Length: 51
Image 1 (cartoon, rainbow, N blue to C red):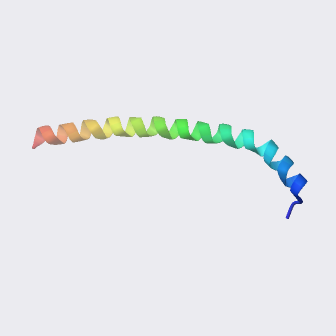
Image 2: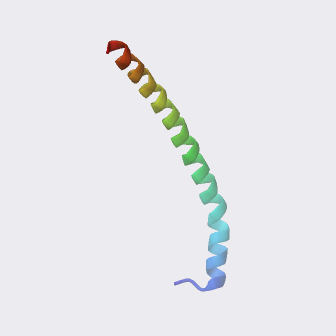
Image 3: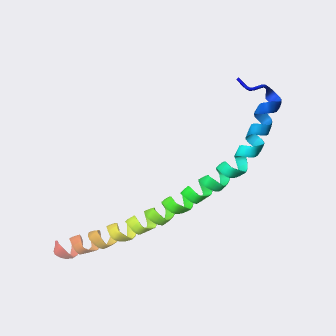
């Protein structure tokens, strides 16, 4: 277990990296979701046309 000062510096160094990483993954998953929803939307529309 790290002592408190070591822990704080560790987090100070890690945090900006983690935040930028989270932002990137959020952006990516958002893009993937919108793409998936668009595909899903087309599928549903064609499904309803077939019915």
